[in-house]
Length: 220
Image 1: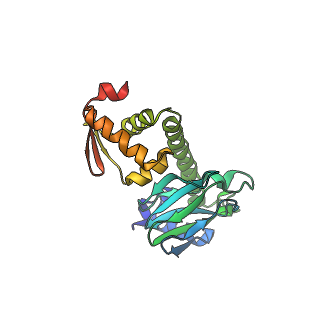
Image 2: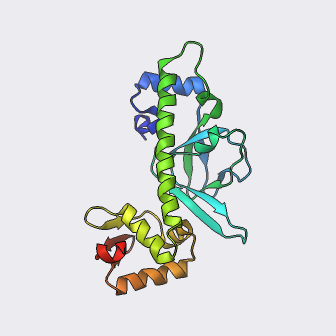
Image 3: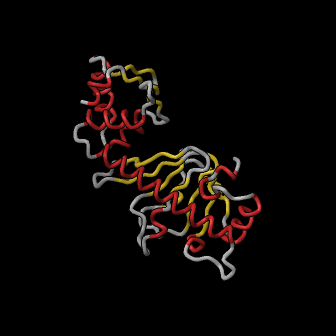
């Protein structure tokens, strides 16, 4: 991937990026499919940037079911950043790969202070980090709105309205099983509710693409 497209290096020259990677001690690591980048209870040590592959951010419920909190497959996606700035708080979730994956790991200490020379590239990285955290807070707020929506139908309606185009097209990279985990419901329940919404003329379903046919019904 083009490293210039990574949000952490936004508005930075190739020279600045090279200096940042060198000064921080960042390293790209390879993980095979079904490998864990970190486990629940681990103390955060790195900022992770996906360069190739796909990961699930997961949390296990008390009865042993896996809840997929998020799925990352877009190269350049940053994750694990929030816990870097909470004092010694361990992860209450884990990250597992769904295919062979490469991740750029940037040590935590690099974000806590600049060097004595106050290097320009270091200041730019910290500014970009603040922007990333703000965007993550926005995303989590949207996720809370979905989870707190109430019934499964309300959760689906909120999810579709958040992710549709002006033409009412919703394209998700998640499978039915992954979407069920994301919403915290069973796959059979999800499939039944989707079929009901299709039969009622609210949605048109074509594999992973869904078209909203009646915005008024969905919004109500």
